[in-house]
Amino acid sequence: MDRFPEDIYTEPSNVDVDTLRNLGPLRGMAGIWAGKRGLDVNPNEGTTRQAYVERYELQPIDPQTNGPQLFYGLRYHQHVNKPDEVATYHDQIGYWLWEPATGTVIQTLAIPRAQIAMAVGRATPDATSFELAATRGPHTYGICSTPFLEYAFKTVEYRIKVSINRDGSWSYDEDTVLMIRGRSEPFHHTDRGMLTKIGEPTPNPLARGSGTKS
Image (cartoon, rainbow, N blue to C red):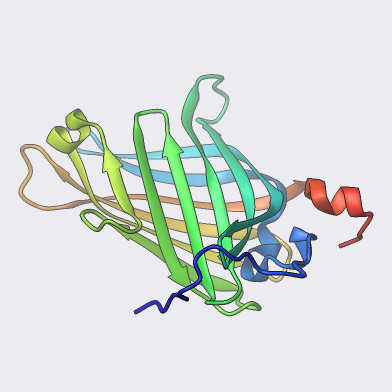
């Protein structure tokens, strides 16, 4: 169980404003990335296996506080297409957050099919792999969907495992568990991708303003 202080207002002092220096296990994800070999296993009347390509941009934000709580993080945008097609196949935005005091990693996500989620996991600052999960129901973290998605494609669990690879790339393995109307068994909607860096991150505004170097 989390332990919180009685003083819920006082913010931490002497905060290092350079986010890139304080991202813990997220440091290897900062930057602009391209993936050419993604695989999506998704439901229709049967099961579809779809290859995809993607662009994934993760940029550092200024340190964030909730009173005494301190986060460092990356704002991200993931854009996915089928190979050789212009139309968007998947679009997702959100934040990856690191709380150094507790070793907590959080991913927030929003997609334009009107669904949001917040997944959480634990890691050490130097971890090269970690896993996050969100489940339906709880008031902290969790999943929220529109009435139609609840009716037809109810998301009961979301998991993502991230691996920072020795060659500088990083990869993810996602499993979104759905209860689909008309089916008795849960469906595992999976996505797997590996990302190669095509651009460096831009230091967060406070770091640029202070002249610090990561």
